[in-house]
Length: 314
Image (cartoon, rainbow, N blue to C red; front, side, top):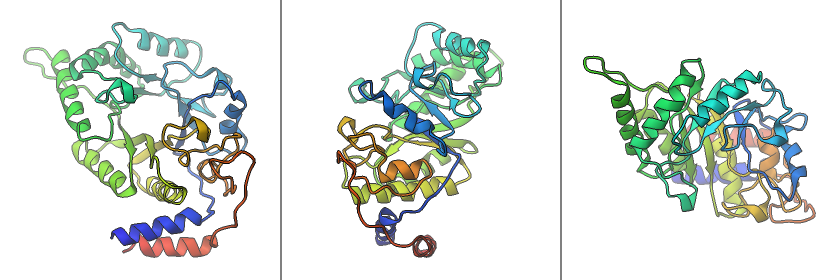
């Protein structure tokens, strides 16, 4: 089995297949020194239909984008002691923006030095009751907190849901805090990714999944491209995966996930992964390059798809 996955990754890493998917979104990580990069994600023909920016309000770069064309999804990033998130979302709605989904708590089981919000489950439950439940009552769909890919994630979420239910239950009237979709993060190989999704499906059944951060970080270019193509094909094929967003919308020299895991090279040109993610074909642009460098085209698409079909049956 492992050899089949390895061969498939190698095939996909050199295939210049154009695939399209309306599940794809943008994890927007702006570069203040290169604002010209922002227009790349909303250029004509881009596959991206939604985005988030770790904030409750839209990024100024996309403030003029209609919600119907490029849906903004607000995020409650970490712990707050008020109703500022709820108020911000209500403000967007009052201003005419159709907010239909929100994300909650970025890696609350992770330490702040690694990007986590580091929130105790009981505290997150109180914030949820104050900010999220009132939005649910308006019909907005909400995602479970997005825990890290570590084993601590599922226990944290189970404790959170228990604490939340305690807050809204009364004597003789036990209630459960509800959610509409499960939000996941993953950094690692494809086998681990597939296993991670399966574990969350078992722990939180009958819910769709959003993979809002994922990548194979700090690996060579061939392995990174193979992972990207294999995971994208996998997400597009799984009915319970409703949306996904690749963490890599920045230049190689600004990357914290390795120089090869990005969608832009150091001049702001789309890499192969960047172009594939937007629904285009390979560019031949090396992630760590300045001026574009081209490399020979890969194996024909028909041959690639035939090989993929055979391997996925193994």
